[in-house]
Length: 287
Ligand SMILES: NC(=O)C1=CN([C@@H]2O[C@H](COP(=O)(O)OP(=O)(O)OC[C@H]3O[C@@H](n4cnc5c(N)ncnc54)[C@H](OP(=O)(O)O)[C@@H]3O)[C@@H](O)[C@H]2O)C=CC1
Image (cartoon, rainbow, N blue to C red; front, side, top):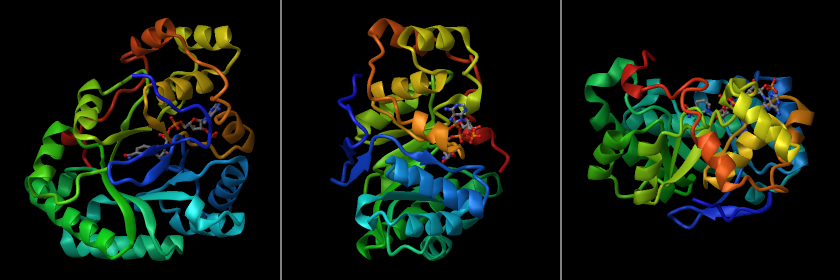
């Protein structure tokens, strides 16, 4: 797939008409407090408009402060947060949405995701709990608290179960996606269902930076390995969410709109399965 994304300001349209930026800021392991706040301010001043956080990251309040301090108009931002594993079910999801809104100090979320489909403590009844959580999320959409709802780490069977009762189709499935694991089965199913694939760990958490293929392609385009990995993601039509707490890296990670990877080089990168970590199987996670 070749993406039509050509500049930082380009967006995709989700299946409910909401527009989502083509690249975003990841914030997992971004320390709460001054670091998270400053990182968000830096990122927004550099042109990022999508911020990806989660209740589980423990940094929603600092991120909210960074947003306020940046002075960027709320309607120009796209803020995502996620339901953590200890809040599955109807009532708990309702409470979790309100808690995230309070912590982020926002009137609405742009995207809210079920973080994991079948957390270990509730693995026996994951399907009914997801249906309940989803209902609470649908009601929050009706109430104007959320603009789009989606999932994360969902495989085919989890999507199939959810779709049995969902009135609103998920807009996004956020999954582990980089050349070390393209999750072909999930991305193909997402596409078939009109669900956008967001790429978490698009840099392979650094694990692909020294890979020979990545390094030689990066040298060829006079780019860094990180830039090649992000460009690969964009050209596949994924929305990459690179995380950094360093301003110069945040800036470099946006300089990915001025080159195109050839089909031959894309194929070489596609062939790197297993070169770094691969996706966690949700059935095997112990959290
Ligand atoms: N839904 C889910 O279950 C999950 C979602 N996510 C989301 O996806 C985001 C990104 O994934 P993540 O796992 O953090 O990993 P990434 O693939 O984004 O890699 C982040 C690492 O790369 C480093 N880095 C970033 N840019 C550069 C650069 N230009 N040069 C050198 N090093 C660089 C960062 O260090 P430094 O900060 O020091 O610059 C950090 O160590 C998360 O932050 C989170 O928002 C992630 C995991 C699971």
